[in-house]
Length: 232
Length: 232
Image 1 (tube, rainbow over the protein chains, first blue to last red):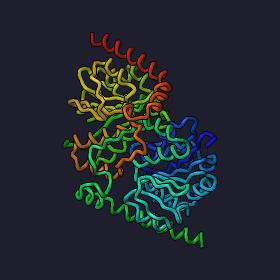
Image 2 (image 1 turned 90 degrees about the vertical axis):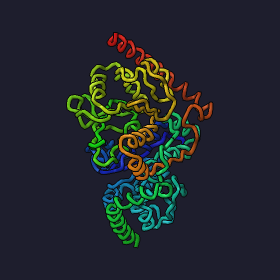
Image 3 (image 1 turned 180 degrees about the vertical axis):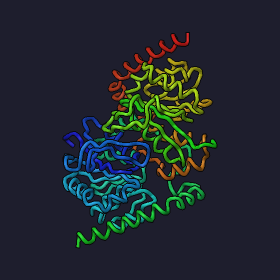
Image 4 (image 1 turned 30 degrees about the vertical axis):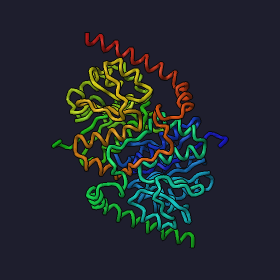
C-alpha cells in the first residue's frame, strides 16, 4: 500500500477484549497507521472483563478505512440483528481493501452478507453458526480467501494481525512487530484447541458454554433468515 | 487458595496495553476472580496505542489483593521515580501472596526494592536495567522465584497469567482458560526474540529504540540510587 494504513474496528458492548486488543497492539505498531474504534456513540463501552474501553469515533463519523475488522465475544449475539451495526459494516466493507474478523466477529461479517461463498474461520465453539451465512468453515488459525481474512478464537487475533501486516505491507515490518511484542509464545499447556485439550477439560467447557451456544445459534439463525429476506 | 482470587494491576499512562489486556483476559476467566485496575485517579488513562482505558479504583481505594501485577511500556520510565506509585506497589506487595509483572513492569518492582536477590524476567530490550535493582536477569518467558512471578515482553503476559492460574489454583482451570481463549499460537514468522529474528530486523529495531532505551536506563539509574539512599 502506498498510503499509511487505516483500520476501523467495531467496538461493541461485551466484546471479548483480547479479540480487539491483540490486533490493536499489532496494528498500532505499523508506522503511520491510523486506528478507529467505532461504535454508535463515543460513550465508554463495557467489555467481557473488567476493562472499559473508549470508542474513538461514531459510525457516522468514522472515515472509510482500508481494513474493517470485527472482533468477537458474547456481545456479537446482539449485533448480528442490529441494523445500525450491520449497516456500518456493509458501508465500510464496500470501500475497504480487506474485510476481516477475529473470533466470532466472523458471524457479524456473515450477517452482513459478506461471507457468502467464502472460506472463513471463527472460534471453535461457533463453527456451526458460520455455515448459516453461506460460508465454508475453515479450522485454520488465520484463513485468507481473496480479500477476506478471518482469525480463529481470541488469541488467534495476534497471528491474524501479523499475517495482515505481512500481506498489506511486507514481511520485515511484521517481523519487527513480532520482535517488539516478544511474540515467541510458550503456552504452559497444550489445551488451546478442542483437538488437544484433555477430554475432561473439553467436556466441562462444553457443558458450561451450552446455554451461551444455544443463544448464539438462535441469534445467528435469526440473522441468517433476515439476510435471506433482504437478498430475496 | 480457599478464597476467590483478587488481582490488582497498576494502570499507568502509556502502558503497553497488551501487557495488561492479555493477563486481564486470562484472570477474568477465573471463576469468581476480582480484578482491580488502579491509578491515582479514575480518569481515563491513555495507553501506548489508540486505546484509552478506565481505572476501576484509585490507589487509596484499592483493596488489598492476593496478587499485585505491574505491566510495562514506555510509561514505566515515569513511574520508576514516582513515590505515589512506588508506595502503592510496596503497600500491596506487603500483603500480597504473589508479586508479579509483565514486560518492563519488573523495573517498577525493582524500583520498589522488591527484586533484590531475586531472579526476574523483563522485555528483552530492558535486561540491562533490571540488574540495577539487585535482580538476577532471567531470559525465561515466565520466571518464578519464590513468590515473584515475572513475565518477559508484552505477549509473554498470556503465558505468565496461565502459569499463575495453574500455580494458585490448578492446572485444569488454566487449561480450560487456554481452551476458551483458543491459545494455540501459530506465529507466522519466528522473529519473536532477538535470538531468532532476522539480523537485519533486529539491527533496525535496535537503532529505532536506542533513544527510548537511553531514557529508560537513565530513569532506572535514578530509581536505583533513590532506592539505595532509602535502604541506606
